[in-house]
Image (cartoon, rainbow, N blue to C red; front, top):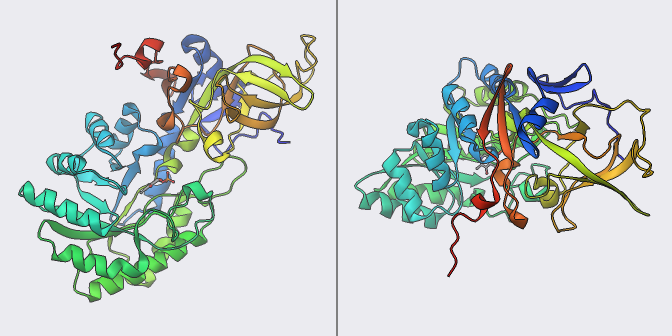
Amino acid sequence: MNTLTAHDLPGQPHIAYADQQLMVEGQRLSDLARAHGTPLFVYSKAAMLSALAAYQRGFAGRQVQICYAMKANSNLAILQIFAHAGCGFDIVSGGELTRVLAAGGDPAKIIFSGVGKSRLEMQQALRAGIGCFNVESLAELDVLHQVALSMGQQAAVSLRVNPNVDPKTHPYISTGLKGNKFGIAHEETLHAYRHAASLSGLKVVGIDCHIGSQITETTPFLDTMDRMLDLVGEIEAAGIALQHIDFGGGLGINYNGDTPPQADALWAKLLAKLDARGYGQRQLMIEPGRSLVGNAGVCLTEVMYLKPSEQKNFCIVDAAMNDLPRPAMYQAFHQIVPVSPRSAVGTDKGDGVGLGAVYDVVGPVCESGDWIGRDRALQVQAGDVLAVLSAGAYCMSMASNYNSRGRAAEILVDGTQAHLIRQRESSFDTFALEQLV
Ligand code: PLP
């Protein structure tokens, strides 16, 4: 059983209780739920900027481009915040490219990652003038070379290396081990670089890696840096100059008492390693996603029914796996807290589980995998609003219309202002592109 006190929120000063009300900055979440309905995602702009500031502090005096990995949360207003703050973007599709340009992102600061870029996506990115392609296979190098030549251009490339380091995270979000589909095997890297350098449609500019996500230990990052720098030495000894080193993303956040290093503390160690090995002045790039937005957002959901049963008590809420897919996808943990905590002694509606019981918190979707939290001690009644915490990353961006459920609305809080940054999808929106025959 996981118990939670109302004051035990993941280290996030911008999302906290005041006078028995959960607030995001200057906004009461109970007011936002009443005004906009549920499920509702609410994000704190200050929390995003302070997460970014931790990286910026760590990089003071260095040449670093922070490219927000927009797959974590690609709402236009959130992209706009990071673009205004000087960030570039790590994209993985033509759709993300279109989105980030619409949000005002600088094309020159865009890097294009992913194992399966199509010719059309390559053309779109070359036309837009993106900064660099992170290429993941020899076959992709050949296709990009052809596409660039056909457009009379040279594509800037960095090769994504698979360093075969265990990031010690969930297997589904581990990407830098042999056997993962990502990157070019460590031992094939030099051959791949020689091949890339021989193709006139390509210009080799960097090296790249990304070993996984929700990494909470420092050692995998340090080991990866060592392996990357070994490769930089070998590649440059072969006469291929590398302008930048892209160290990917992956830094974890506190979901449930996790203690990842702070971004600045992690980078103090990584930069010391770079300095010691003579690469301290090299242009760096990073691609953080989760650590910039994950703890900046919550998802509000209303308790619909309490359903006691012999083995389990269920707390059925109006958010579901289509809104919050991480628990169903990889048994991920989100804390769930009331926005207006009830006192321990309250009035029970007579159903036996009205207050102070242990529940599985589940959604209305017709799947047993549709759960949001298991064995949670909650004092709730139908009609109460709960906040699912740490919901800023890989929630709304992974949301779907399963069961023909419209996706949730999104609010950005900036001080005392609350901006609606995405309207709730209606049923009609969910089938707007379909046709009867
Ligand atoms: N870069 C690449 C290539 C990725 O695949 C990912 C996530 O999977 C990221 C960056 C962002 O990772 P995170 O959100 O863990 O920082």
